[in-house]
Length: 640
Image (cartoon, rainbow, N blue to C red):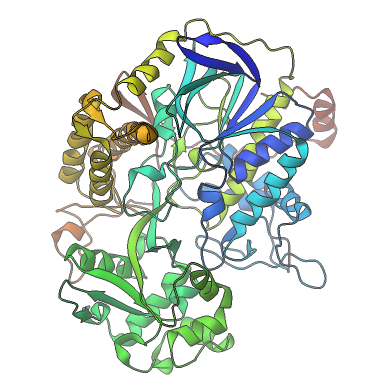
């Protein structure tokens, strides 16, 4: 980066393309830019070892792609159709992600990510949730970490500048065009501005808005900052929630459920409850639903009555009683032998074929998936000797910032990639997020390179007031009378209660008022020392995000929206009344025979507004090779 004159009192620099975030999507964008001939590139990150890509996973973290093995019939159009079938997905976005899935995946293979093959070189797949084929693959619990590390190694070879310890606090926009960004140094609280022509936003999902979360503690997101700058949101109501361990934060999906652990809650007096046994299902039926939870890990309101999602709700209700909820891998449920012959055929056949029919859950886990056991052991938790505390946690935002088929937002030059980009809808196949991050960053780079690089000059005119506002927050951060850390803890808890998997209109409105009150009195909120100023800005980002997301959920419900995906909206007049659950769990399912509407959101001057439209269809395949070849050689007609 080059030094630039100060903006207000803040030291400024310039670089043509700025990438914020050092996860798999951010590193992919940087490396592809460099390999495409761009050189005026820099990356900025809060912490290079932080973030979701590097610090999350599951029993075998999935990468979803086009089938590359076996005799299953598959095609780009079939894959696009299944992504589009997730509801509220634009067909052209789905087609791009399907088209680029193979080259993006094989690039990772060439970089050394250890995806398994058979002796003939086929990349063998398996079925994941919402997957009609066997498109899923995995490099084990740390798939996204392997991706990040291999891509980071390429960026290091490129010699691209990386600035660590800087937190994004504002995106600078003028005439609906990105002009740069403002950061603070996490240690000192000093501000720094970077002017740019292109800003690739690879900051992940809005992890910092929930207390019950499987996101790593180091992940916060910057969605509120982008919304404040004028970037529009899309499908913000759509999330994935599921059961996860709380320390360490990790999905307890797949093998952790398939080996049939004991679910136990403990009250304040230390009394234990095998609470799943108190529900109306017989023991074999409940065990079979626990097994299904491995495949059906995200809470899915459609599976509350007929599938595995009753397990999520029962865990939630135990926590609501003030009890802590655990998985016990040392003992069978109810301390009784597993009735193998009475389980569902699917569970019985799977565990029998894998040889995972030992006398205890831990013996079955070690047989079925030894790395899943070793993961917790590496984190200091021995499942052979201790319980594992779990909760119903936020895991992934299927919505996010609006972008077009080149991953450019409604703001020119701003490219949200990875989880902060809204490429998914209500449902998505497990592992499709890793594919989307690679495809989206590749697509954004193609657009940036097509507009040529070099010869760009920074322009700071009209930006001083925006920078000055951030300086004023820093200067007053130690003199307020409201403790920012306490506020942050409060609003995250409120969001997990009111704006998570179980949503009630009155509860959401009450939460929104609390968030609004804190935003209105933000100038009175302070932190205790200079080293905590960064957290004040994380709180500000979270409050804006919560305001917009809660508003989106309320608006969806008030416009007649029904329960769908990973969200149950209470409806006292609902048509579904689950057995043995209270009135809050009465709901009406969305009619999936009707065309869904995509909700788009704008945040402007503290106000949230909404619009709705039908998803764009998958474009017709009417290309003739010679014509496409001609356009491609000209290298301009495809960039539109």
